[in-house]
Amino acid sequence: MKKMLISLLAIALFCFVTLPSNASVTVPSSGTNTPAVAESPTMNDAVVQDAMLQFKSLSRVEKKTRLAEVKKLAKEYKAQKATASEPSTNTILLVILAILLPPLAVYLHENALNGKFWLSLLLTLLFWLPGVIYALFVVLS
Image (cartoon, rainbow, N blue to C red; front, side, top):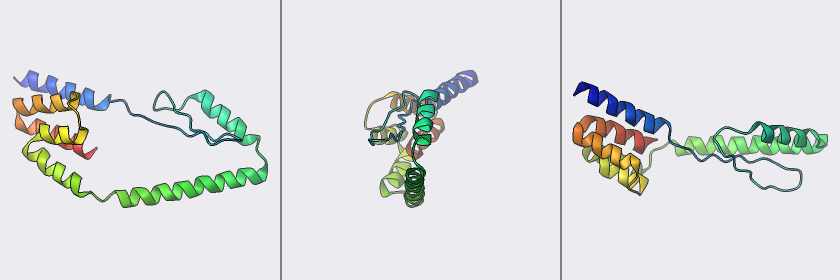
């Protein structure tokens, strides 16, 4: 029984860690503001080198304006992150529901019957506490 619990927790950890994330990277070009979406969460070396070459080919004044824009966007991002750190009412309700009924909280958070829901249901049926812990991870991440 102990080995089964350890293997299920290992599977849950593997599924939780290897979830794909959709990452988009905006590469400034000289004439347009079209975003380039990377295929993987890490940036492609060719894209970075191309962006650096385009940036180096700009005039000094244009480089300064681009850097000012980047600094402005970084400040806006930091301000947005600071205000977004407060938990919303939905998050608080989902945390309470994750403690009471973990699979339902995961379903309401994901809006679908996906692998996270089934894993939460399995962990809750085997032992209630691993289901609660996994549901809290899903809801709070």
